[in-house]
Length: 335
Image (cartoon, rainbow, N blue to C red; front, side):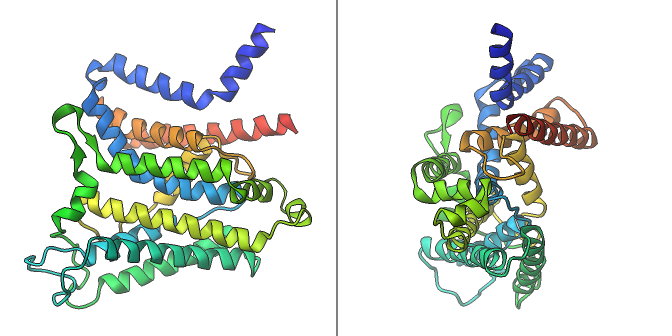
């Protein structure tokens, strides 16, 4: 009986056990890894990634996927950065643009994310295009749109820099000073995680989302407006990608049309490792957060102890495949 309980505990909490083991293993190799500065750096690097992963989680739980997430991040980063440059910067994207309120470009960028998310939702739900194909198409189109915007005169595809201090503070500022300071970007990420948790667990939209992912036909029969629900879910995902794009531009102090490249694959991997089922209907916010942290610890921690980037890719790939295999086996056994 105790063995069964132990096995059940390990199965249900495998993601958190792996995270703890990773941290311990790296710390044993180099004790300097354990420290508040390291923790803060990991949380900062995870902040925008977890927001993107939460957007992807919305889609995965409905039984879909979203390959356009990274390109939406890039587009919204470029849009926000292009309108929030210092008035005295020599290479302004819009030389004659008056200084806008900080929130106007941010809201415009997030709204653009919502629009493209809504387009994905309409294509998938109304026109019945498989999510993989629909979001692959919008991924390519969004990159083209972003590149055209980025190449307009007088910018001519030059990296956007010289961002205003009030904007970059969102990504690099913090409460307090010194080692115990708390970055704003981490606070934003935690707040968004809480909001998404409420949406997943305490709202009708969340219940409908899980129902659609579990069995779409049964959801239709039960009276759920599947088309409207999917459009709303894809739109929310777009808003999260837009938010992540804005924060990424603020964190790095600039933007190019290549921002966000392949971020969607990292987000999908983090979701799967965090227990979001590839077959839909299953997934939690804490699991997604843990999945993102695992990959950040891998990237940061293995670099910290001198493991080469190629070996890091091999380790990440092995973890992804193992997580998916474990996921499929676990839920097949439950059925």
